[in-house]
Each structure stands twice: as structure tokens, then as C-alpha cells.
Length: 106
Image 1 (cartoon, rainbow, N blue to C red):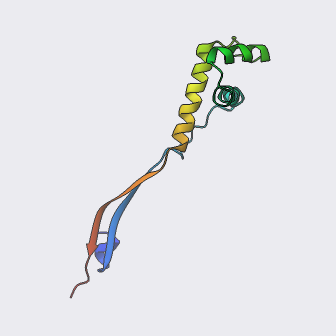
Image 2 (image 1 turned 45 degrees about the vertical axis):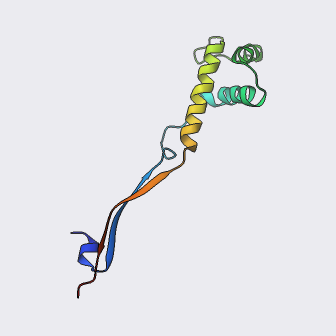
Image 3 (image 1 turned 180 degrees about the horizontal axis):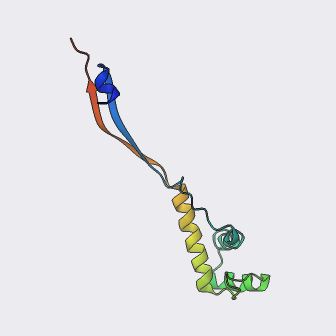
């Protein structure tokens, strides 16, 4: 028996909250500078992935294993960071279930 059943005149309900903002998985710290630069070049300056790859190569950026960055790698970095940011900024949804009102007796 719950508290509401023992205390007439009470309301019992279940509140459910769903969010991805509290997930413990942060974007990899080592990838942040590169992904920030890719986002800036793509979203702010409107460059293509091929142009970004060429610019990053000139600036000395390298991939995770030291390889030169191609357009496909730049696209992957961009896509993964955008997906991560979208999950983190998704709105919280909530609803209430199992509402029970226990009237006073008498």
C-alpha cells in the first residue's frame, strides 16, 4: 500500500521524464578542436567538405591516426558532432500516468 492509500484525500500519480541531456557520454575531448573548426568552416563560412579538407591539410590538421583528412573524414566529423549536439539539445519530454484520487471517507 502506498502513502496515498493510507491518507484519504490524497492523489497518487507517476511522473515520467525522458531526456538525453543527462547522458554521461561527452564528445571526445581530443576531437573538440577539430570538430569545432569543421563546424565553423561549414556552418559559418559555407565551405564544402572538400574545401575544408584542403584547408585543414594546409593548417596541419591530421586524423585520429595521423592520416591526412579527406572530404569523407571531414564529413564524418561534421555529421557525428552535429548528431551529438542535437541529442544534447533535444527537449525533455514528460507525462503523468496512473493518476488515482483517494477520496476522504465519510
